Image 1 (cartoon, one colour):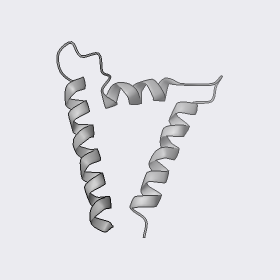
Image 2: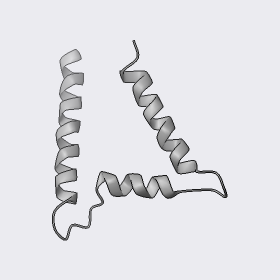
Image 3: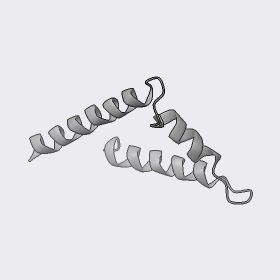
Image 4: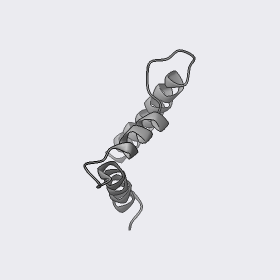
Amino acid sequence: MRALAIGGFAVSIVLFAVVEWAARREGSGIPSLADICAFVMRYEVGPVPVGRIGLFGFWWWLGWHFLAR
């Protein structure tokens, strides 16, 4: 079961790298990770930076679940 989980993460990382590579090719219509993050960071509802709060919450969740022991 552990090997299956590790294999799943490895496949996810490879697919992420392939999509990022495709996004950085000349004339590609696929947004890169930087483009997506910039779009999310600009999102606001009135004076509240909802995108920044959401991105911070995502990183907090990711660190809590994968880095905290």
